[in-house]
Length: 398
Ligand SMILES: Nc1ncnc2c1ncn2[C@@H]1O[C@H](COP(=O)(O)OP(=O)(O)O)[C@@H](O)[C@H]1O
Ligand SMILES: O=C(OP(=O)(O)O)[C@H](O)COP(=O)(O)O
Image (cartoon, rainbow, N blue to C red; front, side):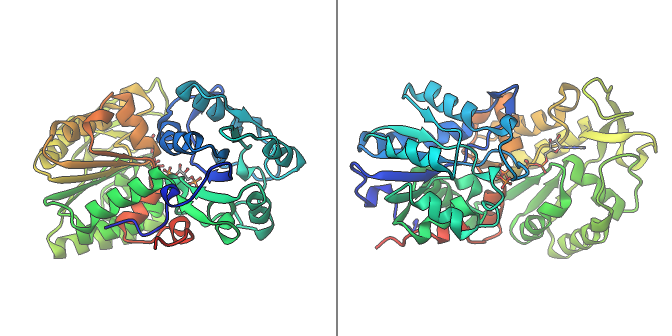
């Protein structure tokens, strides 16, 4: 499917103030960016604008601040520093977003300069898409560019607001993500194997439901598997569960059976007596999880089962780790699945979402995947066939 919106190629940016929404929502540890995928992904558009003499104003959120003022741990300064480090460009930073200090920093820009504003979510009006903040942000630019694919599913002030006041076009990352993902999802080469993990059944229920309609095999792992176990009448000990969704999980299993879609759930699990880095894994069958244990990862038999299903796939879409991969003792299942996807060289593999991408990077397998998407929620909405509000707000291509 061709991208139907204007892009930076379609507009003269020479000498103009270009206000660009990026997704620099990166993981941080002790003030240092631990996975720079999203910063790297924004560089092609930033470089293009710089080479074309634009004055570049970058804005993003980072994390989920309370919205009533600055939270130093969620400052965008480390992301600005990372951009400078990766590009060698001078990158200015201002610790203000909507106030005079930010306006002054913008006014001081020369063509080719790059300025990063502070976290747009330090003010709660951002999330409410308040017109006042959209107006303030729009006053910084002559042109609005959206390149924040990972946030394009959020109808929030800095994502959709400036498009009401300024010519609004897409950056290269947004264009490429939407083009690639809609193209693959429209007619996936079959067998299409979808892998969904992570912790939240409730937030992924819509996509799971859609995947039963579109995938040939749906692999479920991670913390969300236990809600499905409950739906099958098994006990799950202290594992993560969402009791309110058990009935719905049961309905989905039934729907899949009626449609002839294979749903694979773990047959064994690595469980532990507490949730912690030092917890010692024990392998138990799925129908034998002791009351005082919690499931932290899929087990070795499940790894084989999932690897076999992945080996036969022509298209793989993966969102969400198979276990608590942040702890080395429980990273095995996620690594096994990542290796199985990487080993299937003939398939189109799409990895979506912060945690899954971080996991694939941790195992050094990113270059074996066909497409690493910078958006988890956003790519899931595309797989569901939904339009992204950020994209909708942009000017149509002629
Ligand atoms: N069995 C499990 N128990 C508890 N947490 C889990 C389990 N498996 C995976 N997780 C956690 O799920 C988190 C990712 O979940 P989620 O936010 O739904 O995924 P994503 O960010 O990829 O969309 C990771 O931090 C991981 O540790
Ligand atoms: O990290 C993000 O989403 P993702 O984890 O679904 O990929 C985006 O930056 C959106 O962040 P949000 O879910 O706090 O709006």
